[in-house]
Amino acid sequence: MNLAHWLERSARQWPDRPALVLGCDVVADYRRLAQQVAALARTLSTQCAILTGDRVAVLAANCPEMLIALYATWHCGAVAVPVNAKLHPNEARFILEDSGAKLAFVSDDWETQLRALPGLDVPRMRLGGEDWQAALTAQPLGRVARERDDLAWLFYTSGTTGKPKGAMLTHGNLAAMTLNYFVDVDQVGEGDAILHAAPVSHGSGLYNFAHVLKGAAQVFPASQGFDADEVIALLQAHRGVAVFAAPTMVKRLADRVEATGAALPGLKTIIYGGGPMYVADRLRAMRVFGSRLVEIYGQGETPMTISVFSRAEHQNEAHPNRAARLASVGVPMSAVQVSIRGEDGGVLQAGETGEVCVKGPTVMAGYWNNAEATARALRDGWLMTGDLGAIDADGFLTLKDRSKDLIISGGSNIYPREVEEVLLMHPGVAEVSVIGLPDAEWGERVVAVVVARGSAPATTALDAFCLEHIARFKRPKEYRFVDSLPKNNYGKVLKTVLRTQLAKDGDV
Image (cartoon, rainbow, N blue to C red; front, side, top):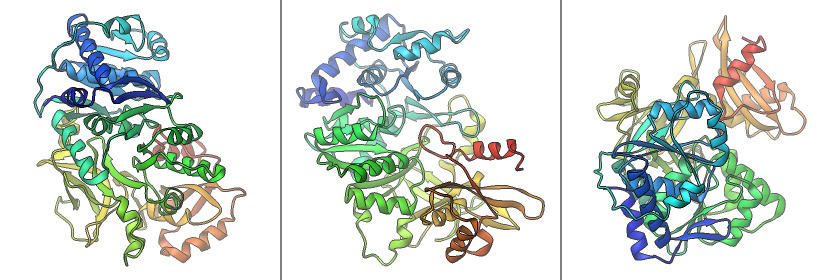
């Protein structure tokens, strides 16, 4: 089934409902959106010679035109390659060339940046430009049929440990993800909306399907990104709003709500994921936002769909395992099976730590043009996530760390997140990242890189605090204080960069 069918379906059922909204202004209702998509698809097929299965990239900051471009791509049977607009031009170039894109939809700023790259020969169409405007008035194209296993979206990973890889997501993968949204994550009702403050090229964009399927509005901030004050204003102007946000965004929004005392009458749900939400941050978010929080854990390779910490579980204060559950990412979602495997591939028992493995209809078909990486990641239908975790007797999954971030010191395994969770409870610590550095005696030593809240606390105080909560061998051997931690565009701390920075300083 071609996912563009869902747009046609909603346009027939609810033609007059707002579909695309910029700030508070309706750009298109569902009738107009479907018409523009079919017209643009005609231009792609006839004038741009886009054939079934060809790749079409979309490179722009969040804007309503992105959804028109994406749905036109699917409507004509092609494959969408959404590219993170915060990338360096050379990184964007790699994705365009690696995917073999036949065309790229670009914003004006990206047209300028790509034009400056020598030898880049990918044809481009400017979103909102003259060719774009003409294309939206073409005769509509009938939707091209696609099957469940046909490729729909090339989802490029962040590439923090090397070149990004294109996870091949099929129409069936994305349909399963979308239907699972209604079962485990949230409902979408009449008059509801999704606010795209996080990148449409990734998590927020993946949630477009659930809202298109239910005829809900897609709201785009005028700033084209996340600004806490703007988000607050939009949550006061709109109703029934769901927002997908990285944990760093949730923290920044909570800061502004607390600082201003703003009410959020239009906020229905904050769905957060894409990075670790530490217990201290989760408790604060619960205090600020109440019963409007849902956490999801997923990867591009099984988009938005591994586990869920539900709205109800956020409020389950009376449960005897409350403390442990708050440190978890919830239970496996309905669409997938999750198991914990040891180094030999065997399934581990409840409470044992190993690699998180996932199987189900949301798991990617493989990596684009990368058979070696596909063979490492997919084994007998199971996705090897590279994340370390444990599932308790009640089925709750707790992530320990990425396998590459595990610290082995003196022969003992130390999970950085466990140490980070403790340090974040200290009032003098605003942010922290724990890494392992080479050590002649211990193999690796535990180093905590700290962003202080105000004046830096004494290291002896931090050491004593750790000893109150975790085993002596897990406590940091050193504390380094910095003004900020290096992060990627989704707010994840780049531990590889952190290690490199310390190495340049002569610390390893």
